[in-house]
Length: 242
Image (cartoon, rainbow, N blue to C red):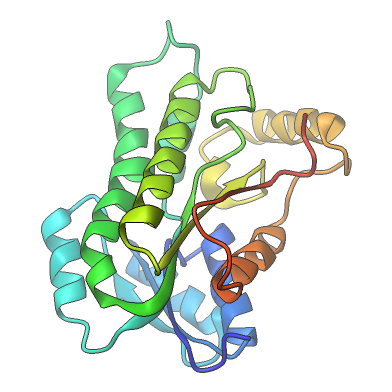
């Protein structure tokens, strides 16, 4: 399915990114993972298996991103960007009145501007029939979650960007996964009680009766990389949450 294809997963050191890296390796791909924390990257590369290679990269640093792709001596078939830090996620969960502008900007810097910069510089290394997979989330343009105003606005920006980019770089493809609530380290900044309450509340409104697993999202990412007839789409993988 992805045999011998080169895949770069930015944010591949944990959570959904690591699950995608592992699934891509299982599908026969040659995988690179990139993130900021070198120790976590090394552990993730070992967990992903295969010939997974780790690369330290901060996607909020445009010069570093440009240099990273300039140094790449081969094309990549698929670029997946899942990166965002737990500290910026939890900081952006608040009422509009209670949220600091700095917290909202920090979330958008990582969740929108980071992928924007990666796509800008990474597209020149993308194979002629390659693809980009970006991530928004359940609190996007149609799903309402409490205290997710800034997160919802940012997710909507990612989706609009992807649709326009799909037209701009065609026939290379661009798609978005709008993931529902998934058990990942992204919420480690919350207290255990608050985190479990959030998971339980989500499960009661999900048609499948549970929150997501990283492997659920990985399966969707492999599909989007493999199906060459899908582009400009936002795929809601959220357990059927109304």
